Image 1 (cartoon, rainbow, N blue to C red):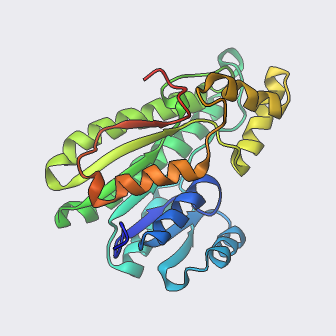
Image 2: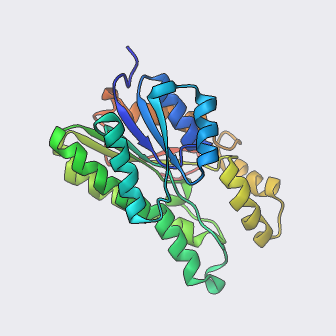
Length: 259
């Protein structure tokens, strides 16, 4: 039997990158998945490429807005009857700059995109999971939720906050059959990394390839992180076999983070 047979999952920012890898892994393990993104075109392309038929649906929503998060979760429940697994994958930053030059807007964007979206989606999902006594919440944090790098302070602060929310939430719902964990991937050469990483590299006076080389040099594997490796750990956490893991900040970074 597949590990997620009959389960229902929601994956924010699931049309590309690590979110897309998690969606595919969940479908392969028997789950029905609602994937989210802002672009209808990208969402439809993802559905076409996944070829999962009725097992996958796309809901366009901007998860930096509370009402959009709630609509996404409500549509998932309307489509499949419940939410068993929530993957809060959406996150990012914009207008990156050193703290001495960083705008208020920069920090607000990172907090809305990373922290508030995670909170809004989790709150709505828990109100479906708690009465049924089973659930899995998986927050996609980052290596930068444990460490930090120049010119990324807003993102680093937001991901540290996601890790704190993860630990506290796990304490609240552990006795009712719900686990809450965070995955902390290292740098991944994804679409969004190519967009944001180029900006950060420019601010540091280096090329994008040199920017990735910084992450490679810090890893025991001397490689950036593969999205499939992150997806494999997400499957474990989402499954019955992961029931004993909660409140954990799990590094999938090739041996980079110090803890």
